[in-house]
Image (tube, rainbow, N blue to C red):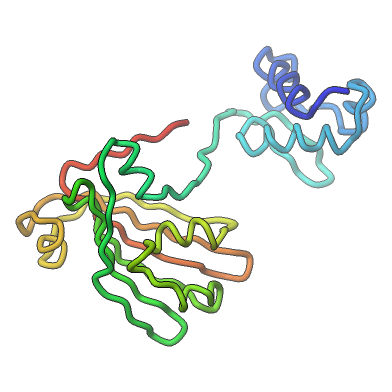
Length: 213
């Protein structure tokens, strides 16, 4: 029996060869399951993977169509800064600068280091209603970034990159003059119940981001 990856590859071949043209309605799952000699659940998984990649548009009771402008969709993954730094061949460390609590929100400031030099300055809020275990963690031992990746899975999130200049706080810890251009990442993640964490990451001057699509 073919696996769902094989069916995904065959469906993608039909899309790219325009056997299934842009905007066209493709055969339903029952017909494809009969054609390919497999369970409908296997067909569903293959088609869902293509929908997640942007090749198909699936609508309840309206069937599945080939996207008019097929394009791959970005998958959001939160990097562990320790692994990111170590992948550069550098030694990672972090310093917890401040931790406080405001109601059900844990507030953290942390400095990430690469070979003892500033790498990124983190300003984070953690919703303890969603992640109560965070209240008991020693974030001087493990960074909030790494602990949350390991312990707080999310369903969706947003990421915004923007340019800003270093204020007094950033200048002090990133060891740069005030007014220095910086790359800023603001990221928010959510579970089905609500927000998990919000973080503003100010990277040291010269930082570059590479994305794989």
